[in-house]
Image 1 (cartoon, rainbow, N blue to C red):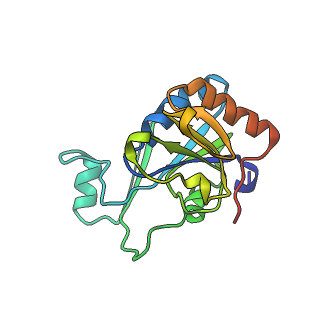
Image 2 (image 1 turned 90 degrees about the vertical axis):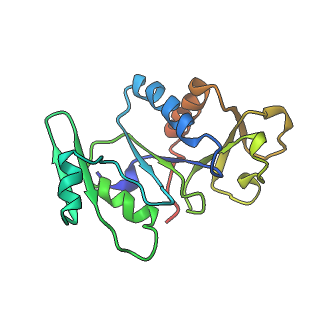
Length: 179
């Protein structure tokens, strides 16, 4: 299956807005609808998924540039990167080539051209991305009555409402990439 055929929706916001909490709440609702979901999360700093003492950590720490650890239940791939630039969303999406997915959720990559839902918390005191990003199709917020935007406004704490919005956009075939 080509990535061009897999619906893609992003959750974009400034740090501390609650993107991961929202995505973690929406995924089970979407899975209950029968969807197979892949996630790409952007990180701005050095992060580790393996911990000292575990085999994957010890092998990577010993100098392996790539470690793929697998069982019948789970697989994880850790690849050291010495790139001078952050990987693009398109480069990361190509990792999913051939996977059996119904939806890819992207957390972050707020400046990339693809369909996104903005996560906006009034306490963060940052400008709305939706006012300058034409790829934002909705704003999930904790203060829906105070926003003046030309896109759908969703309740940040209502995971079912947000999942239903995504399912509707999937039926309309409007969750797409612009590159």
